Length: 64
Image (cartoon, rainbow, N blue to C red; front, side, top):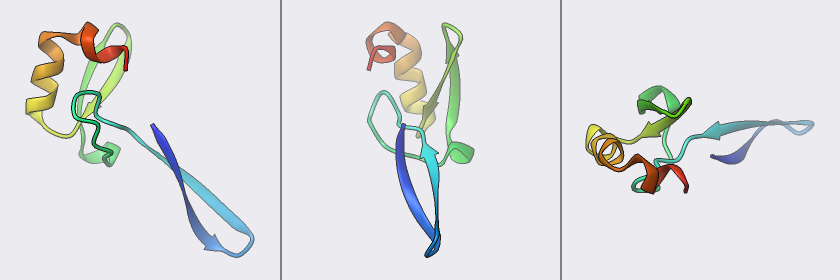
């Protein structure tokens, strides 16, 4: 996950953390992501296609 800052006012900076799809590397809004749990960890995907690829070979992508 990558952090980025939003300037709310001159004295405060707030950070959001956006998940990154482990298959294609796209950063996405967590609320719009397709979620798959593997080995006790949640993984976020940009689409059902990436989730499907991950589910066929989770070991390949879960180590990224």
